[in-house]
Amino acid sequence: MVLSVAESAFIYDSLVASHPIRPDSRKPTQYRPLKANCGFLPNSNGSSRIYNSDGTECISSVKAKVIRSSEISDLINVEINIFGEKDNTTLCQHLTTLIKDSLIDSFDFSVLKLTDKYYFQLYIDISILYLPEDFRYSSYTLYSILSLISMGVYIALKSAKLPLLISDKKDFEVEEEPTFSDDWEVSAFLIPRNAKRSFQPALIFIVGLAGNTVIIDPSLEEEQVLEHGICVTWSNSKVSAPVQSLALSTTNNKGLKPQMILKAMDLVKIVASEVGDALDLIAEQDIDEFDAVF
Image 1 (cartoon, rainbow, N blue to C red):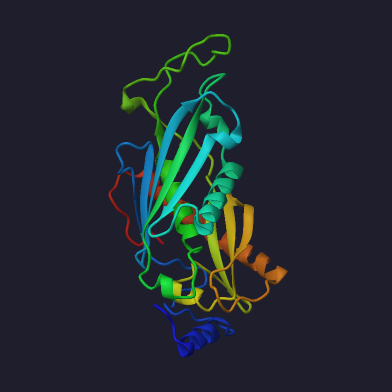
Image 2 (tube, helix red, strand yellow; image 1 turned 60 degrees about the vertical axis):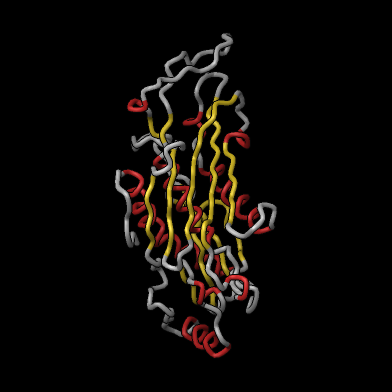
């Protein structure tokens, strides 16, 4: 919804008050309801579908390919397609870079090693299927979907499976390509469920700033009046790179105070574990859909 001047002023004043009030009455640490399910694409190693209350929908697919390379930058490939947007737009390229960089910084690449010479290479394809109808006429940007994309990729990776290797792992002096079992029942999860070997792919949180107020998961109405936005990455139980400022609106932007970055990081520390646990629950259960996860 495109806000009028009066509506924008009312929402802004409510957010910067000593006791902030959000338009939908959420707490500063509260997410909008989300729906998600996983494992529904039969030709993918892992997949997820996630969408929020404004109708924005994200589908993520993870596919694995065997390659003869150990360059870290070659092992994870990310491609983002946004409905109505060209692939070479600044938005698509920036979102792709943020997602890929966060995954590379948080990923345990030992799970991709097959043999002395071969690795699994991951292709992560992300599609945003629906955007709000008034996007073209409003002042908000689409950087807030970064959090939704990150959660979708998280579920897809957590639920992804890889075929069982049955050939020798020590093939440094042997010209032999890896051989796999054709029994999918003996496949293994990409990210081990064993607590000692498991790790947490990066989650990116979007924090909105207005005055001295910080809020998680800003709505489209809030984005139109926010002064700034920050993406904060959470991985393996701590804040990690990248932490970056974002323009959530094309108007009303102001300078970013350093102490607000710290407040944004503190806010993420409060909600990150709960969000991760909810996403893990989706990825670990064979169900069709979870409603109102948060």
